[in-house]
Amino acid sequence: MTEFNYKTCTGCSLICEDILFPDAGSGSVSQARNLCRKGQAHYQALFSERTGPLVEGSEVSLDQAIERAAEILRNASAPVIYGWSNCTLEAQEVGLALAAKIGAFVDDPSSYCEGQLMERILSGKIPSCTLDDVRNFADTSIFWGSDPSSTQPRHLSRFSYFPRGEKRQKSYEEERTCIVVDVRESPTARLCPNTTYRVLPGEDLQFLEAILAVLEGKIPKFGDKKKMIELGSIIKKTEYGVIFPGPLMLVSLQDQMDRFEELLRRLNEITTFKVVPMTGQYNSRGYSQLLFDRTGRVKGVKFTASGEAAEAPSLVEAVKGADAILVLGSDPLLDLPLGLARSFAAAPIIAIDPRRSLTADVARVVIPSAISGLETGGTALRTDGVRVTFEPSMKTNQLADEQILTRIMEAI
Amino acid sequence: MVSAMEIYMLLPKTNCKKCGLPTCMAFAVGLLGREKKLEECTPLFEEKKYEAKLAKLKEIVAPLESASETGLVIHPEKCFGCGNCVIACPVNVAAEPTRVGAGLGPEGDRVILRVEDGVVVANNLQECKRFGPNKILCNACTATCPSKAIEFV
Image 1 (cartoon, each protein chain N blue to C red):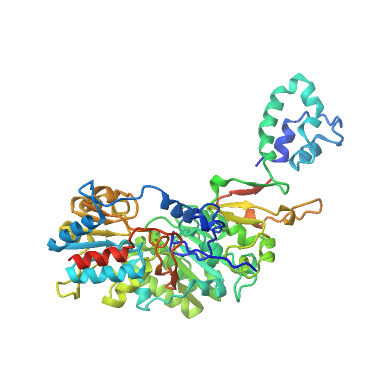
Image 2 (cartoon, rainbow over the protein chains, first blue to last red):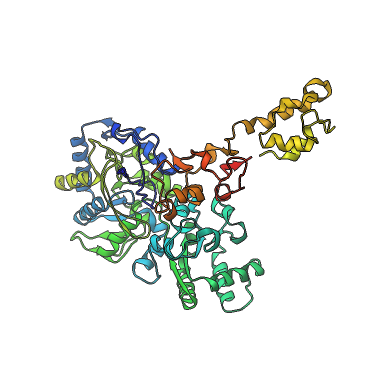
């Protein structure tokens, strides 16, 4: 039996560890096996539009760029560190130490997406499980406002619907049920047209109340009554159910997450039901976990001058009052709403970015880094909280995020 | 994908038996199964009145030529590389039960479907349940495709 040299892909939060490169020795990434289209694009990013060290748009040496970044941060009275989710746990740890040292406000993209849910999962208010448990035991997967076919292409095939597991030998053909709750006919919904529920934006709470009503034996006031009662009977027959809440549902429920908690409590009275979050970037969960362990919060945190974590203003206020923003492993100008992106662009940005991006284009200082996960090894938490340690897939002479952050910290 | 009825509508519909089959409908099915060639329908080429129909026929039959021996057509531009078909294919699971059966990507060369460079590719078609005269009309791979990137003719 030949030994296979598996590589890890950090293109999405599933962190697939079964990638094979037939001619990896020559440094080529062609004919990559088991890599989905998203992962393929992630690997192709190695070769296009890499950044060089820049200060105010002119090329400088790496040392000068780091020196200038340290100078900006040293003189800043209200610095912000934003991004985090595309870095290894090691880089995040150094970054948080830096934030505590300079008294920065820290935030990541999850605070306007799955933050509310993540806080409840990490504090144990909502029961969760690993994706391996999903594969081995789950017989009902509910994709509520999420579309794994587009966001985490291998979610269905690796864990939630198609594979055979310990207790689920007959898998999708007989034992597993896939339910999709979405605003449109997503690619995932096409796989189970009979158990797709259409919910318009903002109607998720009514849908949730309808499920609760059906479980009580009442007639639901929302949607197709017959289909809702069918959903109720699927839930009652379930032995081990999992809900995968996506951004659509989380944004729509926002402040009514208590009702979602109530639904989970009610479901767990009938049978076992768990929740597995669907994070976007590969180490979003890792950052939330790290910040939660350190400060007890998962959303924006402001470190005081003495390094204590304090109640923070919202990201909008923090960015408006910022006199230096360190962006790390993210592209806020691309991701955030226009108004907030404008506030970002108005502040002096230091971007640690391996590739050209909108943020790197407007940044005062650009520090090139190795692509985290491909050119640097490290540790990350998968979307379900499983710790994955990986080796770099490619060789590079660029510095890793944590090395850059350590050098900035030393310079300060 | 084109159906036998669509092909039949463009044939002469005279049941002349010159192709060796009893009816034009049988010829349409044969054409779809790639057992017959369009050239075997001689009236279509000899008689002038069928010219427009012939041109249309050539157009709709063209994609059939790109299909593999088992009739599998892959549209790489639609494929996500999700690997649902790889995991669902019964032959793949039999080839690597501990990997493909448990949702991991295959590592050997005995599988039929495999994701390569982010797109599904087919190998070892002689292992497919649809191969040969005694084929079983298995559709595990096409039924599990979220983007209809693979289909059978």
